[in-house]
Image (tube, rainbow, N blue to C red):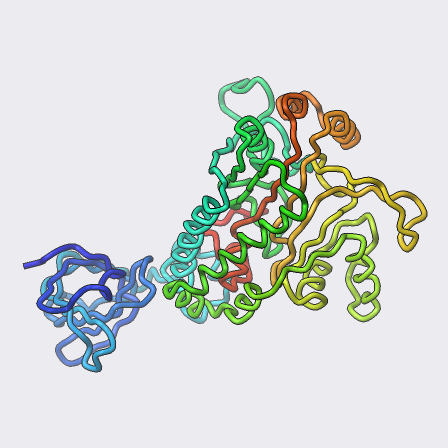
Length: 450
């Protein structure tokens, strides 16, 4: 008689004395002896596959790869005493998988496997990624609470372009004039989150999807991704960098000390040694102006595709050189030119650097975090809280002030300095798990021309 239902992931923690269980799994390996099938079963929460031994007369036909099996079984130790085995008593359900329907194999090129959106989820790699993603996400919420951040929800439907870059998806409805004004999928919850942070005078964070109509087809870009966005009252630029470093090191430390996640990293061949060094190192901090000088100094040796010039944004090649080769650790770059950053960033006092120009240089308190293997992981800033300065910035960038009336009102109703950052969580997962393509960490990726 069956004692209880258990998932395969619970099997290793159960006592084995005379325990009969009911469970289920998907067949991922098949071996046979004269009278027995030796099967490896797995579910999405299994870090290790489970050995199942079944008499051949339990099934009318030989089992096939990826078939589903529900059964009762007795738990036993393997002959060497190192692992747990399930000896099948009764098969309750068998869902065969027709071998002719299998469109994947272990030797398939990654680009081809990505096109098999449904069947690729049968593989150990993708199941491991999905499991690890959930575990790391749960810890992100935990560490956010430990940092005193209140979770808030921002709308997916917005009426303005938060970043001012125009990379939005406009919504259309079969009902004419559904909204009184053009509506878009959000590119960031920041504008709405600033309202909550301002009114509650409380540190907050958002974790939710963002949508960018960016036609990039690189391995770092997707049209839909998850965004982690803290916003903190009265924080300084140094304090913001401190917070980012604290959260990221805490996340890495959790992963490197969790036995199940470490097994995931082993399956995915992640570079755990490099991640450990990140936890032990102090993130470097360099101004944009100094970073440009460093890049120019080494251009003759590196031969960047694009020559680094003051006033231009850093390219992926520049970002990765700084954090991977020059500083050899995660690197904060701060003090970007105002012209290439968003309208809401706090304006710094103009300065003159004769190595760059004899004219005053206008920068802002914006900061990007660059990490090895990825480049930019986080982008943040101290927000411009001065009403007149913000109006001037928005006008010069061609933004319609009517779209930001509520946002602007915050600067006249008990305003205060504050700041925050945004982190693409899918890129963060890529970095930790050693995944080289963002479409591998998203179960159903959406991207340009997909």
